[in-house]
Image (cartoon, rainbow, N blue to C red; front, side, top):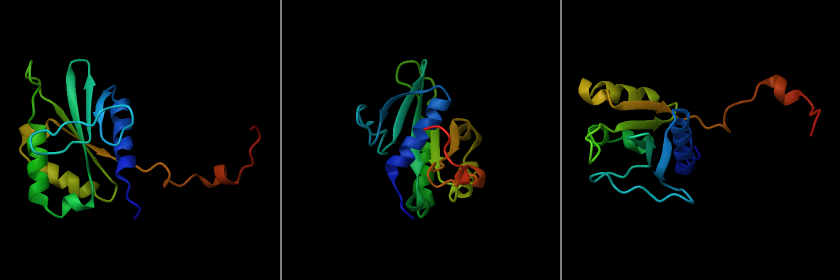
Length: 143
């Protein structure tokens, strides 16, 4: 598998945009700064919607080898609050299609008050999805 973390972060940011969030900082970006560590953990995206904030992380295959470490990371990041007004920060977790069930069972094993702040997002690689046969076989009419 050709794994590219930058594409996964881009896909996660697209999910933020679909929900109305603006990106404040992101990893592997050109114009935005990289996000600071939250506690001892690295995050991939920090976004904002009006006066509420969200944290985004991407989980890959290596994160599921040590389930306890990943579970502690998710629990810590999902219980964060903003500094001044104390609002809870939403945690978006981006996972690939093959790891989605593992991530779902991992999130379901957490207590209810922690699960409320977690949004599990499926990251789909747009280039790997197959075009319908009808679209591939048609000639281009306009260029």
